Length: 388
Image (cartoon, rainbow, N blue to C red):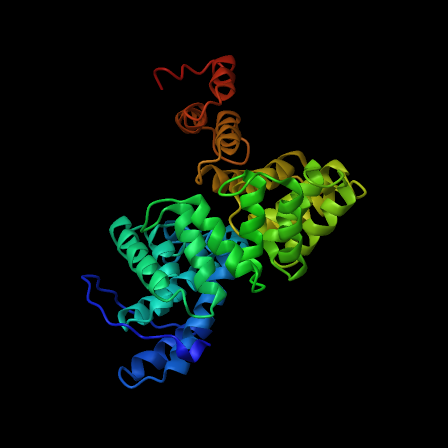
């Protein structure tokens, strides 16, 4: 099937400078650049498959948007701040997405149509490069035109992408019924990602009649194929008792399956189960272990929880500097509770030099998101935040 995909030509006003890389995706890019003409379609298919698989794994099939390029350390910063080495897994994933982007851009420039859909998602931001809405819109339209024109190909990935395009209204008018149609078509061919999306449609009642049992059915099919997001969602269904009998042990089972594949949200949820002793024996060290796994991937909620564990010394040796480090990382991503916590540490001079202005700065950030307890605390400490 793959070697029958058509190569179309087109023009656009987007210039991209390729960067060298020692990664697998980077070496693939170099191979394309060395052979600017006469590239076998099978080679393009292989390069695309490599890039798309990495993209799907890191971004959970395009859903995750937390890999902001501006969160990467500045040159020399890793050497100056050894604490940042704890975020090395996150930095590696951001760089991998940047490499994927460059590969997909090169493929798109050669008219390789399947590259348009993930490329549009990357341009939307939070996936390895700076946001560019104009280019995102351009490639969204290109993706829809190409996928729709090639719907007759026996390729479930094209149908799944069409479902996502209709669901989000990217490059075409939003249409949940059309989204459900294409997800169902791909799901019938065994596409795990389509199974997961179809489960979501039944869960929310978008494009289909809401049906908890159908949501469980399709998510389980995806989960049993090893689809990490579906495993996570299956755990949530068991946790909440939606479409199945409530069962914390089954929730833990599916959270663990996804967590062991590196799914940060599942790692966070598994940490929560250990923290609360639901479905598993309560264990502070295991809670910290899984929250750290998620925090190292840039998961803001896990970063805040890990910071507070360092603050309280639960499951880990008490360390005010580590508490500040992790709370700051979550606060910089806009996590209101972490902003509050960081403000309080500046207020009290715990793990950082006491600084009323910084205390007010972070507490005000939290208050702007509706968390007013931080500013109330500042008043209790005698800080006039209105004039600071």
